[in-house]
Length: 298
Image (tube, rainbow, N blue to C red; front, side, top):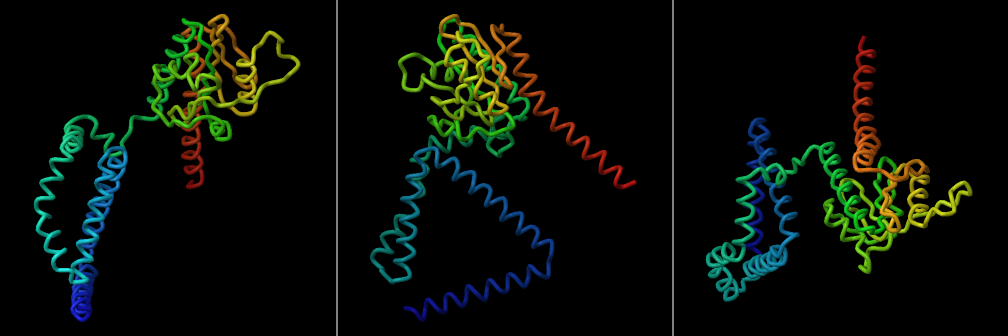
């Protein structure tokens, strides 16, 4: 048995070496092989990411186990077991198509629609998505204000606030007005605390913020507003505070509270200090780098 296995391995090794010799003599063929491997690895990677989010993942582990057992039965010459497993392989392919039918249909639908860009990782322009998220946050703030539901939404900017995110319940969810409003609904598990928006995601809810204890802050300012001011002082984050007593919307930025904001003003502040500051700064840095490079080349 082991002699046959050794002969088989030698044959595989000789074939591999012959193929590698052929590749070194033909550079174009080598580039084609590398491209082929990269495409296949990328498709496998995307499939695994997709599978982990569905019931396919559990089935794949079962299939992998069966393949390993089949390979071992071949090596160890377990002929009866190997015959049973290999006999059912063709039927297994049909069974997989039937079992995975909803998932396969969904993937094919994505290939035939605009979701193809998302499937291959070409996401929406980050600046446009950030603006879209801000509009959603403003809608949520207005809804909370209408019902006088207290809310505290913190937008992370350049300085990361992972230590604050760690104090809450991590979510990593898409930003939506419905989700934000539901998170602050009274008597629900996550309503008490702040919602953190970071990297275009609802990063966490029920987060604990540092309170501002400055003596120059008015005594009538409540805990929620003090928390918003506190996080804006300790980082460059912007906090949106909705008062449950008055329903008024305020923004805390750089340790300063801007109170009683209307929809358009709130939107303009967030666009200016979250989108414009971030992306205009990046554009200016790129322009400066190009100019510096041109000067160096002269």
